[in-house]
Length: 292
Image (cartoon, rainbow, N blue to C red; front, side, top):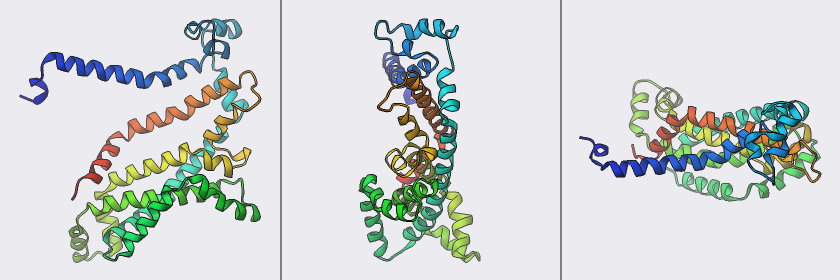
């Protein structure tokens, strides 16, 4: 009989009820924002009666229906949020690709090195990563302005990779160290070169670790505000700075609902991605915690 079946029914009921309560509590802000994104501003931000956001009283009066997609139309079409989504995709793919390419090669080399410089290299990388990103951006501004590179996606990709690379190196080095060196040696005895052993033997074994590191790199680039808001021009903004621009110092009617719709548009892909890669994330984190 399993341990779960030995537990009293009351304990199982309380644990299940608490878990359900916690899930509802955690998901409520997003679900409420998702619901409100299909209402007009007067309903969603009603001070007289919060239930208006449920009934859609003003939404019915202004649009003739209980729900409206005006917020999404205004954000994506009128304010060009679709361009920001494309910019975000380009930045994230580039940052993840470059970070993982150098991270896997560097992490493998550091994990197999017997020299003390590997320790000091990782230590300096950790110090670099611990610095606030905003302090690092200031060092890039002068050359970017002098070379007329400010405002482009490529400059932001360079800075985000520089900020993200130490973290990628640390994670991947940890994963590689948990893979026995015997695998490398066996492959090389069978005729593989060092790079062939790395490509055909080591990478398939620690693939969950690569995916986990790639997801964290993606989230860093996807959610970044400080770097992208400073280095990107208005035309090349990614989604997070663009979202903030809807809530400027001058509040225009409708802009708040553009922001609400943009919040849902930014958050929804993250839910889908985490649900899709949840097994790889758990496997990768577990692999990094168990000594091979």
